[in-house]
Structures are given as C-alpha cells and as structure tokens.
Length: 191
Length: 262
Image 1 (spheres, rainbow over the protein chains, first blue to last red):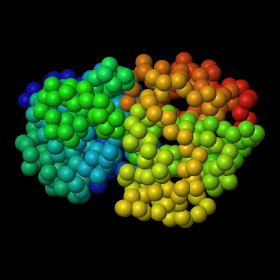
Image 2 (cartoon, one colour; image 1 turned 135 degrees about the vertical axis):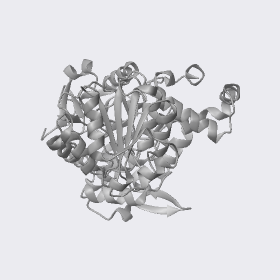
Image 3 (cartoon, rainbow over the protein chains, first blue to last red; image 1 turned 30 degrees about the horizontal axis):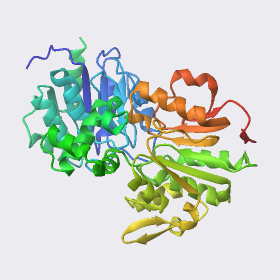
Image 4 (spheres, chains in turn red, orange; image 1 turned 180 degrees about the vertical axis):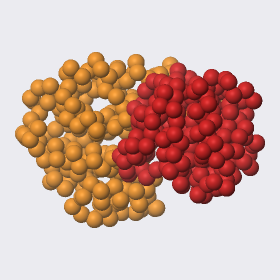
C-alpha cells in the first residue's frame, strides 16, 4: 500500500448516525485540504435544505450540493443532493440522476462508489461509515477490486454497524479505523 | 444506435448510457452487441426501446416548493385565450397529473391545453388514460400534503387492476404528440413548458439545443421550468427573467402572457 499516491478524489458514504461522524471528520480536516471530497449520505428526500448548512457550520472546507455537470475541484466537499443519485463521470464532473431508487435509496451509495471506482480506478479513496443497511458495500468492493484504497469505519465505533460489516463480508479493506483515525489519515495526505 | 433511433443518445452521460443499456441487455437476455443490433433492427422493438430507455418521473409533486410557487403564479395569470402547456419529454404521468390537479383546484382546467410528448406511444397512451406505472401512493400523498392541496389526495384517483388511474375529468385536455421533441416540429404559442430533470440525461451541447428549441416555441412572457439541480445555459440568460432561482423557473421577456402579480 502506497499512501503517497495522489488521490483524485475521496468518496465517503454513510447512513444512520453518519451525519455526526462526517461533521466530526470535516471539523478536524486541514482547511487547505487539496483533494475533492464527495459525500453520499442517506437523507430524507423531501427535505432539500438543512444538511449542507449544518455541515458548513462544522466544516473547515466549503461544502456544496453540486448542480448537474459541475466540475469537481480540490478543497471542496460535494454533498449528494436529496432525491438525486450522484455519479462521477470520466471527465471529472458530477452527473445527477432521477433514475429508480437503488437499495431503496436515492441517492444510493453503491451508485456513487461504483462510478468513482470506474472514473478514478486506483486514484480514489473510498470510506464507508456507520449505517443501518447494506448500501455502499458493493460499491466499496468495486473500489477495492479496481485498486482504489478503502477505509471501513471500525464497527465498534459505529452507532449501527450493519453497513461497515456488510463491506467487511465482501472484501478485506486497506484500513479499519475509528473516526479520529480516519481524520488523521486524511490530514497526513495533505502534508 | 443513435442513428437507427434518430435520437441524441450518443450525447448522454456515459455512466447513464451504461446503466440503461445494462438494464435492456438484462431484460432481453442479450449476450453481445450483435444480438442488440438485431433487436434494434426490428421495427416492432423500437417503441419498446424508448419505453425501456427513458427515465420515469420519480413521484407526483416532486419538490413541493416548486408546485406551491407555480400555483401562486398560475393564480396571477391573466387568461384571455386558451394556453398551451408543453411537457416535451414525459415518460410517465407524475408531473402532468400534478399540474392537472393544481389547475383543477384553481378551477382553470378548461383554460389549458396540455401537450405531452415522448418517443414511446405506449408511455403516452398510459398518460392519456391517467395511468401511473408505479403507484407510489405513500410518497405522492405525502407530497400532496406538503403542497397544502385543497382536497384529500384519495379524491383524485381510483385503483383499477392494481393500477393508479387519475380521474378522467382531469385528463380530458391532454393532447399526446409522438416523437422526440428535437426531431419533430415544436408546438407553437406555448405559455408554459415543464422540462424538469430532463437535461440530466444529455450533454451540454444537446442541452443547449433543447433549451433553444423550447424557448423558440415559448410565447413572450411564457414560463419554462427546469430541474432544481440543472443549470440554464448561460447563452439564454439574457432573454429570460429568473422568477425563482431555487426552483429554476424562468420567464421569457415580453408581454403576450401576462402574470399580474409578477
């Protein structure tokens, strides 16, 4: 494992309990963190506002809900908007979609992870956090088998460990870390 | 494929194209591209291809804030002649049925001619009959509650053979037009265009062609809505007033359609 590779993006997925974890990670990240971070969390689909504002209150880096076809740039957090799937395209842009729910979810974390695996291959870091269903596990496996780097939140540190355990049943990740250690890992990338 | 179908599918985002074709390959047990080409060469299949490829609207009254704003706008409409409303690429009934309920509650049903267009006749026939492919009752009802409608949502439909059927009095003014809107002549003198979340499936180049064609058919003062997460191409902004930036509702400059409170 070579931690010095330059990632083109970091993608984080989570469900139940993950807002607190994501807030904590973003609040401790270096303000000049250079790599784009894409966050796909299960959220209430009829509530369009609130989440991005809440994360921005905590985050050291600007958090936005991208428009369709928006270019992905560094030092920015991209939050998947409610009621849209989020995909990464080969030209490093965001593609949003209103296609069918997947794993009963829109946005579906598997969709976001799989597209990142195809677009970035070994240049992506996938992180799966606490959650109460299995969405995201297959997408993480795709990142792993396309030689991307994978971090699974330590199940013992999760509110609900179904999501990390589903991933651990499918492949052996590069790291199993607590939220504090995930932040440490990310910050050393920006040194 | 794009050539055979006469459609700009070669201008779709790659991940989208891959997902839709994977779905079609699975559905028809296709093993390779030759089998797919064979299927495409069958005229019988073309209509079904459009039905399988296109994306249905997710739910009725998606983005309740949009519908609340549109309702306020419609209340302020000064109507002398019947107004054409155009839904240029509509694969399922959720969006148009929402509009029909809104105008019913404003007692404006007979003031609008509602033009629904799509390359799949099967999809259009369902819309004309008031049928929803996915009932999605729970979500539709809860969205209706969020727009603060005047009635009970249950008053608007019946269930027939386990399918949602909108009251027939509401669908009487629907006119269906078969074909992709970029490849056939546009209706003229359109007052309102609902084109939400359709550009998601086209690249920037075709999105510009889409908006150009739609705005050309819009009467001065007419209104066009795109999806909340779509972007109006810069080149059109000088000819439009943005009425609501959050819900992406734009008005074409001019005064043939008058909105009294605007």
